[in-house]
Length: 291
Image (tube, helix red, strand yellow):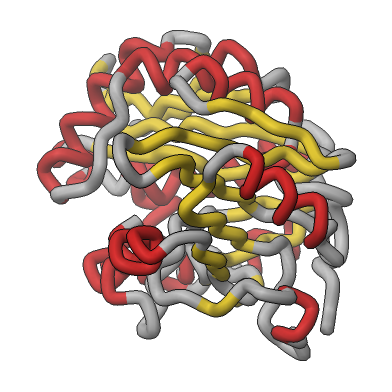
């Protein structure tokens, strides 16, 4: 079993993320340094999720908390890669087929030189970055979350993706200490944007979107290149592109377009161990598969 090299904890186990979850209606429990997020459902009881914890898990403490809170289900998505993963360390948790977090992603090593990072782009991607520059696309850093949300939510709705309420995105922006917002402009119009969060020297490419015109002038290519270049300048060691399609997870079939886009920037494709659940009631077993 291979523990992920690099940060001690994922951003979803940070104090800032826990505060965000509280603000959007989740209860937050602590078991040692571990954050557990709990929400109650009528008739069913409590659903507990533990995103990206390090292993080994404090299984007895989690079990005790789940029973005391009337949980019908606990879902764990460990911060471990699948290579060499030993399922026995999950105790009574069993692999499920409905992960909440991406099971596959791309990591870009920002400790490489800027020349190496540019060389790692595939030929077509490198050409499109240059074409965007020639078209006059410019990337700026801003704090204008409202402008980004309008662009991103419109784009996400067109593609049929889940769009969180603006207040949720605003809450996340307010409580996570390390954040960056980059917008790409063309002739004064905002045509692409990327919302980034940082934690323990890892930069997360959390939300991104572009307009039809932005794609026509290849703004997303220049924007992601600027994320890489500026992320290195800001002192991060890794850029996590936060998800690509996984053939084992049906809901990611619609991700093929942006997965192809992300792969053009090089990096290392990694696969996490997956999602594991434990049920505490008959109803939990019946309805838990839909969560």
